[in-house]
Length: 421
Image 1 (cartoon, helix red, strand yellow):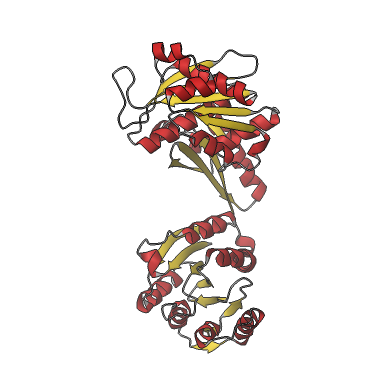
Image 2 (tube, rainbow, N blue to C red):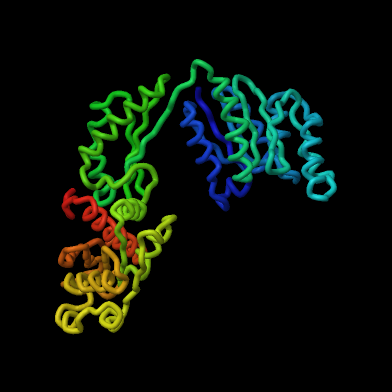
């Protein structure tokens, strides 16, 4: 089965609102064995809506439409569906009863504009909306079964799961495909190098499609497979993921949408270890990324943003002689910062960053993009590393500095050589 998705509304057409609905719907349809071939964004224009509905009806098996079911004059989806299907709008008693109950339960009268929402194309199947006023509906136009849902994201998601996906599964019957995906997240290798390493993977594992997505500074490897037997599809993806890990090595840090900070936190929790951070150039970003993880209080002790040299010496115990001799951006300074963070917070591990995020402040010896990262673990002498990671913009440099620090800690916790590619 093939599907198309239509998101309506002037705010979608003009870009004033990001169309997250279509992305969610596409992912759900693909997971349920329906191939999504087109996404459309249309404004509130009756003629264009009718034309596109008819066009889609001539080629797709399924279409999910969001938006345009509200009470105002620019909510045109029901009228456009009726015109495209060559039927009138009629009052749907169940839709009217649901609207009346919705307003009665809130102590408000049903006004004429909301009553408009109870008019659906003749022959349409009403889809109840348990969390809003706008009922959805299903209607066959041409060869295609259309499903119309509200544009409000939480209403759409609820109805997609409870009303639409089961109906699509019934439509597919024995034709249903299992279209599954696996995501490997990588850090420390460019998109082009990742692509080069994996170039032969589809030939090695027949039935797998490969895609790459850059989500700075992470590269996501997307593996897709489809078939009528779910377990066979899963086995194909297992083989592909295992081979991709072999080809990419230690740059693969996780699966799905798990972040570097989450991977680090999970490993610390498994080891019953804790972490403290000392930040200069990242300005608290490391601590922010770590505390974004639910449950991080179990393993994250705290952090210090020691931006000035005096803060490094007074709060973290960095030797004034080290800073005078080596400067704030140096491996020795970074190692003393990491050791200081570990000591101050009584943590198992200390992690530090000190560098030059730009756009000014660089020199020939220490250009913009230079970062020194310190690492101090249980029973080990502090270590420090220097990298040149200039991505032109200050914010991007800070982000990649923080991720590089987390990746070094990830490798140390896993026993991976710190610079293994």
